[in-house]
Amino acid sequence: MAEAVILSMIQKLEKCLENNWTKRMLTFAHIKSIINEIGDIVDIVRDKKFGEGRRLSFLVSDLVHMAHDALDLYKNDKTSELYFMAMWIGEIKMRMLKLGVDGAESNSENVDEDNVVVGLDKHIEMVLRTMIFYTQKYRPLLLIKGMSGIGKTTLAREIYNHADVVKRFRYRAWVCVSNVLTLKEIIIKLLLQVQVAVDGESLHTFSSLEEIDNQTLLYMLHKHLQGLPHLIVFNDLPKQIYFRPIWKALQKEVSDGSKLVVTSHMMHRFLNYKPHVVYNMEPLDSILSWQLFYKTINSGNKLRNEHKFPRELEYQGKLMLRKCGGLPLAIKEVVNQLAQKKASTVTDWEQLLESVDLVQH
Image 1 (spheres, rainbow, N blue to C red):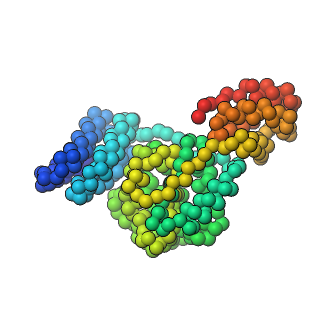
Image 2 (tube, one colour; image 1 turned 45 degrees about the horizontal axis):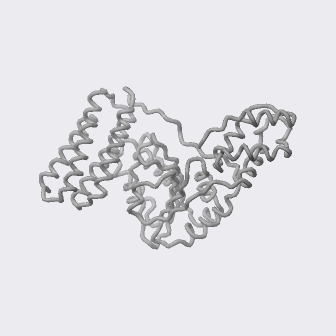
């Protein structure tokens, strides 16, 4: 079934080439490259002898969507976007190569960062004032950018749950994106949240929506949100995700006031062509690094005994934290290592500090 669907797509693309052979040479070359990539995918499906697994069906759905978009881009002579389309289809090919015989693809689910935070007040105020509420309405997309572990998810979550944001945007949704999610899965997860937000309940389940093609799912999403100002967060968006169809479905009138927030450690290719605002997060300074360390290790049940981290070791602790580079995630990893061990004296703590395995980020 999967092979037949992919072969049908190739035939449509080749027919388009025959009927539009007067296109610019570079545009023609890009569509040929796309056909070659999809042809490689057919060989992969044959060689691996995939069953009709769930993961395979999701990837094929994405591939069909991309092929239809490629046809539109080719007809409209969008050369640069066709170049990136070929690269995204190449990502699909690589993912299929990594699939197991049964169509499984393993990876850990995206998780939120620790809820202990410091030094975010200024970031929250800046994003709320200049990018969420008072920014130019022709820039509805905000990218929170920074290296892994710097606190992008934490900042986005603080914004998402902020009282003023909840009051302003009645319709909100949060989707944790990961390298293993397909475009179809992201659309379904988003649609299920939107249906609950708008209708108060969802008439569908994930399984029932799996049988619907991507284009129809996106149309359902657009109809649900049409005319309703909303805030949607896509957390940890990787380069492998083909984001263009989601943007197209969510694109609103200039006066709508809806916002999309994306967190990523890189500049997504798609954003090169769309109006957006970038908020760069910087590492914590030495003072805030120490505050985060001390607050985290003494919070909740991090320490399994009644002894707090001794203040007299603050200097040694700060020297150790320099190797964390101001990254909140690295600092919290140090805390977790210390919390797993017992210390009741200053000497015990000194020995633990020396034993911490600092992972470079």
